[in-house]
Image (cartoon, rainbow over all chains, first blue to last red; front, side, top):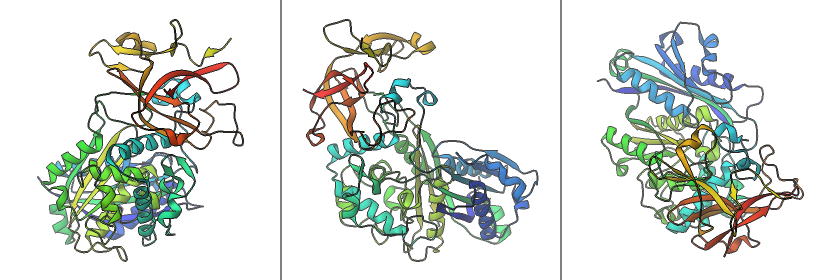
Length: 380
Length: 132
C-alpha cells in the first residue's frame, strides 16, 4: 500500500475575525494549502471537510470551483478535523485516490456553549439544577486526578503560562500576551481548581491540508511529512466523559488511551520516539492528563516535568508549541487540523521563533465530547 | 406541598429519601437515573444507598446559563455551589449537588450522605449529598 504525505498546509489565524464568516476563513485556508502544495483546486480528486457551527463545509465549492469533486461533509464533534484527516488518509491509502484535501473551519458565538439536556438524551432536571456545564466536567476530572496523583494547582498554572508564552511566538494564535503563572493561579475561579486563564474559549478559524500518495509526490517533485499513524476511537464502558449523571465504579480506558495505542502500533514507534506533541488542552488539566493518556509519562510525573520545563519548546518533549487551544481558542471544525498544521510546520523546519530543533516525529491528539479522540503521528 | 423536581427521581416512601436507579437486566450494570421511555424496559427499578464517599468535586462559581438552568437567582444574587460525584459502594457513582458552606473542607474519599435540597423558592426540591 502507498504511504500518505501532507504536501500543503494552510491556516486562517484563529481567534476573532470580524467581517469574515467561518466559511471565508475556511476558503482562506484552502487557498493557502493549495499555494503551499503548488496545486490548483482542479487537481483535487476528493475533499473531506467539517464545521460545527458555521454551515456546511462543502459551501467552499462555489468559491473554489464546481469541478465535480467528491466532497464529503464530516461531523464528529470536537474531533471533526481529525476525522476528516483520517477519511482523507484512508481514501489515498486504499489506492482509490492520489491527491485530495481536508478542511475544517468554524465560528462560534462568544461565551460558554449552552447545551440542552434532551439533545444529549438526558432528563430536563439535569439541566434545571445546574449540573449540565462542560466546565464542571473538566473541574471534576482534574480534581480527582490531582487527588490521586499528587498534581498541585501551580502545575495547572504552568501549563497555561507555557501556552501563552508559545502563543506569543505563533502567527496563527489568538492570545499573544504572555501571562505569568501567579496571575493565572490567582485569576477568577471558574470551576475549581480551574481559573479563567486555564480554560480555552470557543473561537474562529480555518485549516486545510493537501494529502498525496507516494506516486503523486514523486510526480510533483515535492516533499512533505508522511502520516505514519492515524486513528480515531470512541469511549468504552467505564470512561469518564462530559454530561454523565452516573459513572461505573469499575473504571475503563479513555478514548485517548485506545486511539493513542492504535496510532503507535500503526506507526511502529513508541512515545519516547516523539519529538514534538500537540495535545488537546481544552483546559490546563486536560493537557496534564493527556500527557499520561498518550503514553508520555506515568500518572503524577507531570508535576516535576512542568516544574523542570520539559514540555516547553526547549524541553525534552515540547507540547503545544503554538499555544494549543488555550492560546488559539477552539473552533471545533478546525481545531484538530490546526494541531496537524503546527506539526507540519515543525517537521518542515518552518516554525520561526518556536522551532523544535531536529523534530522528526510529530504527534497530535484531539479529544472531544461525547467521548472520542483522534491521534496522528507524522514523520518529517 | 413540596415536590421533587422530577417524578421517578427520588423515592420518598421509606424512612428517608433514596435515589431511584436502574439495574440493567442484561448484565446487572447499575445506572442513575432510572431510564424512561422505551429504554426503561431494559432496567429494573432499584433504590440506591443513601451513603457513600466523595469521588470528585468542583465548585460552580458563576451562574449557569438559562436555559437550561432554572434556579430563581440572578447574576447578582447567585451563590456558588459545590457539586461532584459520590461513590455508592458496589452500586454506582452518582453526580450530585453538594451541601457545604466551606468548600475548602471538601476532600476526596470523605463520607457523604443523601439529603434533599431546595434550590429555588417554589417548593421544588432536588437531591444533594452532604458530608457526614
